[in-house]
Length: 272
Image (cartoon, rainbow, N blue to C red):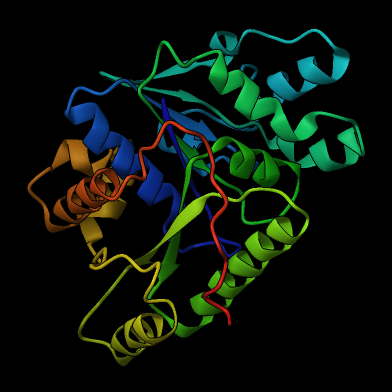
């Protein structure tokens, strides 16, 4: 099983769009894929018509069952997205209370890793949509994943979110924990604007070692696909946005982001 997380400590940069559309690429190619919504806002769940305010089967139940000492089978909270080869574990808004509820309870940083281990014979790929805050949910995602994708909208304020994310990885690494290798993904790129071209230039100057070689373009069809609840990579695989995500997938697979060895220690050196 290959487990990738999509995270940035800033909202609105394309995390859910990235996870959903990479999932669509994999599903289209016949790979059994699980989407995991770890954001209490539940954007990914809502994408597929599941209401995080009313969701009874969700990731929240896995944390609650682990806290009580009666681990729940992860298959009990897996839902169909309605698309072949594409399932998900949805979010619940109650997940926002987990940091307060769990406190210093031992073992809560590995709940997701343990649950996914129990699903290894059912899915080839897992894509995790992370919350924008550092807490027990993001710690679980980083502990479970083998590769981290950090979407960065190509506008200057989004670079601050990237810097916060890299400082978080650095802090976790200093605490003697392994952190996953990562890819910085420029999103919402519009070559007609100075903000996009200037930000992309800055990313290439400062973060070249981890920056993806291409970009995800601005594409209004992403919004339309979201409204319909269909990954654009399934709805219109020939669209330019879909082609960009297919290209990203090829590169992730080619550079070893699909390693099954688990998260490895990666130097967080881009800020120095």
